[in-house]
Image 1: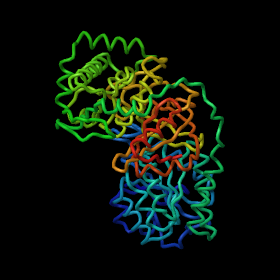
Image 2: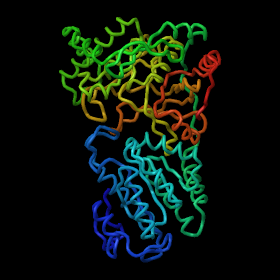
Image 3: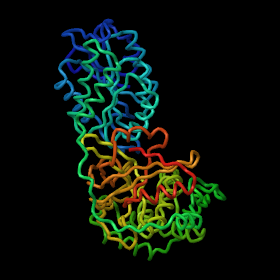
Image 4: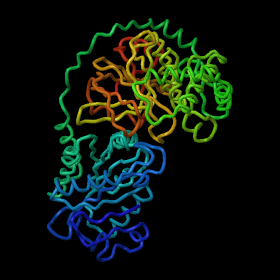
Length: 518
């Protein structure tokens, strides 16, 4: 944990963890003498602690936004903007990596006094800080640093909403003006209002600054879905290969789809055995077909091509049409020696299934709906919600270039490194716009399928986070989209086409339940 100097120019200086916790915050340190709940040393300003929830100021591990990302300019910009635009407050910026740091902050603030509320910025995805600060009983504003902390922000916000936390408001906007408007809601408490009134004020500020629904009329899409019975038959005839560890053997079916565990070693052996000339030919095709290749060597392209050929050979050996690999665990553990991202991309272009992170729920979703739509690939993503544009952004480093199936049109794509660690090779697919999309996820234990739809409106080129970023305007209530992440996890699977009717029919035939999240 690191403590920053006051933005108001007070005499306190930056302190490290030992100084902050050991000094007892004596006179001249970060927090001076005990004060009333919201008062500041001078000027009657409410003192707000800004807590940046992250690993480190310069990111030293693979994660969103990316390894090596320098948060200092971002934090400085936020600090300066809030100090300038929110004149009725004094801000105390602080870093925290997890619940231990958050608890120490609470203990110091309780013993010294003077902090009237907290702004928690989720800068990396999974640092658990806001949960501890929410127990303070003081007003808390929870803010997403988009394409940095968005996964944790969505999951943790949904959890706070489900728990009906009475003192936590939130803001999820790419526009700093929206963050400023939310911070100004602390004025409700400064003037004697309750934390519940503060939360209501943040909700009203968010709603007022979210654009109205745009035109959701979409381009025509000649989708011919299979009948429900034919889809169920295709699902039973399919097979998923789950590559999670060195374990191999039988596995329980998922959604009625047969599944088998395959070891890293088998996939790696198939990679090593891939024909070198064929690997070079595949690499040539990728290199010549891509709109650009950036920071990816020819050697990496060829090893990625060999991984594609190896996975395809493993699929053929096991008479399967879907494979999902614990890619990061396998690569970082030295069990596989090439990222499968480009291989997944190519499999999906062909009407097969290549799925990330050994996520068998998303893989089963892809198998079912690819069968239903007669070849349309699913796009697994880590979504982000941006109220400034009334968009949900589906982000991942793997996406097909054949959104309408193997016989459909080809869209442009770029080959770049895998975003989180800037290694290997992955894909930025420039997906078609103006079409209706359907986004799903399954929960077989509860026998539920999650459902929402959105019109594809943009491809976001931001260098942070995963490479492909398809932006959609959701059909329905964007506020409701904040509520289900804690029960379902972060991943969603997006398909081109309005497949509401056949999806609902499939779920009904299986005796499952649809959960509409928008």
